[in-house]
Length: 337
Picture 1 (cartoon, rainbow, N blue to C red):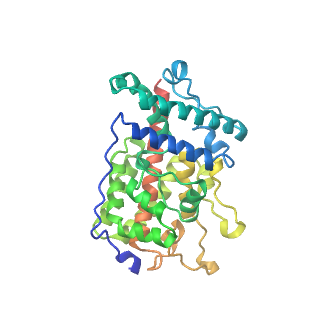
Picture 2: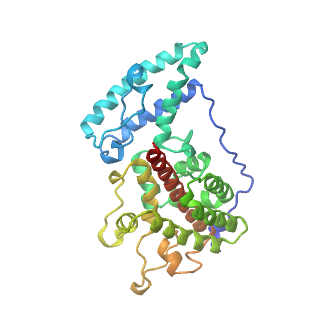
Picture 3: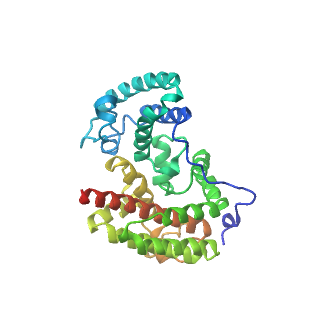
């Protein structure tokens, strides 16, 4: 066992975040802060990543309260900039309005608040509730360079701690200290998987949780690595699977491009790409200490197998299963209409 794996939760006592009250003005502050941060750091690199999920059309009386936001297929950056400026102006007006509205009118405003909450949740899942959104550069570091899964798991407190950390080594130590909490978060997320096509994956994912909790970290890492491969092969055609797993960065220096995907897909599969970095024993590649799909399968060793890597593998496969659960469920609902 690696030295870093001796870390435990110790006296830390993270508790699950309580769900926010349906009507509280501080929620508005968090929402508007998120939009301001978005406007500052996401304008230049955005094309398709924003196109399908962030259209700021808030014609409240006629549009917003009567039908969901339907984004166009493509949004140019210049058009997005104009929309962001308009939305910031809308923010200022709405903040003033909300501050003066009596709570006696809360029922009439409830649908507005609920729709705004759903809009924010359509970008980031519930495990990001209350977390300070990082810049795109910070996202790239954690997702693409370090392969840390952040969608649906872990919980908000762990995410915030990871974002506050200054180095990759410090983030691995956080995962090492909070492994019990992260495993519990993964267990909760997997328990909520409902789509019939994912029930086998769900059960194996829960087996992985149990193995970690019972101290069988090597078994957990091996299962997580192979389950990830199985889930991708079952739910992607070959071309799509290769697109998110063909990691030739060592050879050609080409990184995973977040701009090529919708936000949730980009943030879910960037760590998958990272985990598929090429590793070839016949080429004399050193065994990596960070979690990797190939060394987990082809280089069983004390260097690759550790509790931290087992937890990172569990986070990754849980995130992917939850992604497919969300997308397949949404698709099934559309087909029934």
